[in-house]
Length: 239
Image (cartoon, rainbow, N blue to C red; front, side, top):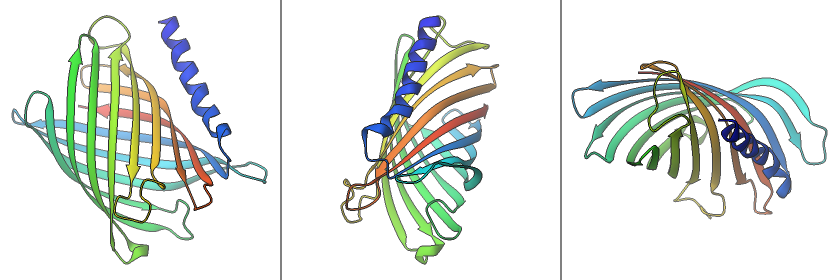
């Protein structure tokens, strides 16, 4: 347990250190609490509801002093249905509503539809997952023109005590994700990378709490300047 805590601390320090490897054109520290509800509809169907609020805590622009201010900027609400195709493969679809004023001059409204293919496999205590998602995004400030984004996310999680996760025990969750607006100009040049490491607690059979750090990074212009975001994520899941 002590060794695992040291491992997670090392990951967290690394996430904060990563922006120093690049030209820090803009770096922000943010807070992202989330609530998630999941349930079953028969033997193969599942439903989910998720809501989150992203808020800025501090911002550092290259050549300027850091500024600290609590500023909510993005709210999302998502609902979806999933079908368990096989023991390992899951198909799902959903809708997301959001408002945001992140990097914009005025608040924007977003409607989003999504389709997702997920794969999961266990090897002893370790569970590996792979998620591929296609999104169609419609923004009010773009006159509701569609923007296509593709996402790919492998992840690994495992309990820290024993071979299975039981109530009142902890687990580690690590993810990496790549995102690209695939049909726009230079989609891979402007791709986004997200790296996450979290520690979770299985409070009971129906409740789970997870907290962790996520680092998001992408190019913001043709000169290669970058946009860095460091988020503290806190997720409470009901099932």
